[in-house]
Length: 229
Image (cartoon, rainbow, N blue to C red; front, side):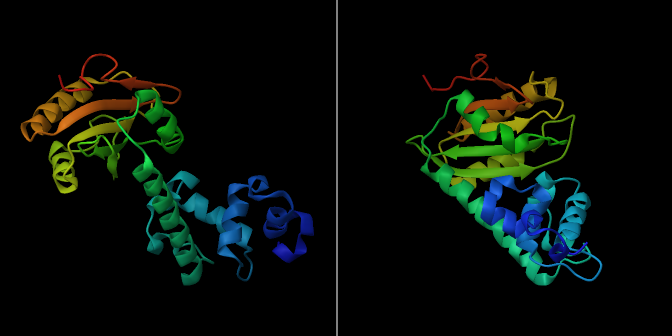
């Protein structure tokens, strides 16, 4: 069905104007960005196909423009619009991080990232890097899908720390199972990372594992000292 054949109150743009963006479904929000459909497919149809193509809305910002354009009905302009939206979102998140002063409490970090990790089926890893004044100067999201092992190599982390010229850092990763207790591999890798970073005079402040409804902090369990003595 074409959008113009829908009652005005059910068309995404009209709904947004009348009730606000909060009233729109994920498919409807995407349809507003996509703008128009093609023959035999409305913007709503195209939006639904796009979400299905990437296996869920949470994966949409991770895929390339080329992948988005594989969906029938997505034009170059529509793909660029989506890419621009995701880039703006990333910059907004970055600006919020830049304004934050750290190190934050484990609870603060859990509150900040729990929705980001919600629904993820693979482990992902976030590196928060701080200067000598404990200000967060960089956030690095390192996507390494796995369900069994520490998601990022020690070498990759050290490389990022040196590039950022940070003094302290916090690592955050999720357990898709919802279980927050660290695995043996988490414990071993964290100890190795702590020692390797300290050798370079960079201090690991905490390793936080985020589950579905709670978190595990290595610092709170006295596995890492948050402050150097």
